[in-house]
Length: 302
Image (cartoon, rainbow, N blue to C red; front, side, top):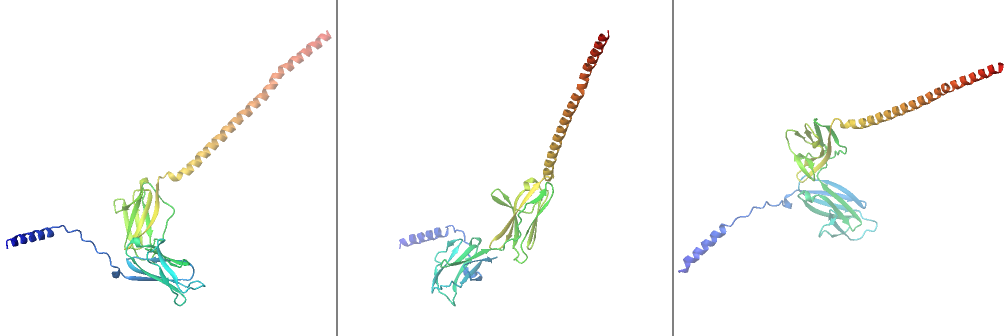
């Protein structure tokens, strides 16, 4: 009986210690595959290779099915398997028997995040394969040439999704800074306009520091589609540089021609002066000869 109070005290102390432990953070439950809607994509493969694009907007259980007509030597059973990004998916090899002269290979994939998108391939005995490219809708308008603007002016960058594609949940803009991309928000010099399938970024009072690569991003629930464009900000004198270079070359050429003509003219003038100087030098000699002849004649007469 004397031990009973001691046991009770020990039990109370144990209960108090247990209840005072720090409770860890509550983990957010993962999306259950059974809670997701199921989409099916079936492709009939008549040749040896084929590519099928599959657009996704939201997390989904995606059922992919390949149907292959086979070759002339139809075997009673072949091996089929799946690859993801070029690597074989573990435990995906199954025997496939022909049904109605066709081979069927099907698998359900739980696509819940961006990392689950990409290239999925069904393979029939290494004789035929079909690629499924899983991605969000892609921005169709691509701009290769840079957009030119002048210092102190404003520029409008535009991104547009095709009208037949689903409207993005929102649009974002980024600018490349080294190896990173910095998001652009509404500010004094930036104005972002979103209108369904289209978005615009207006940059005011641009400077040469605004030159660079800009990215627009169409955001969907499962991933984001991006497109990029290059902005080049120049001074007003930049377009004149080629013409100024040509002008300098013309001035140099004309100057060289004038120098040559002037030198050639001086040379001709010197030659002309030399020819004119010869008669003057010979005229006194002729006069002296005539004087000597007259003197000789007079001496003979005498």
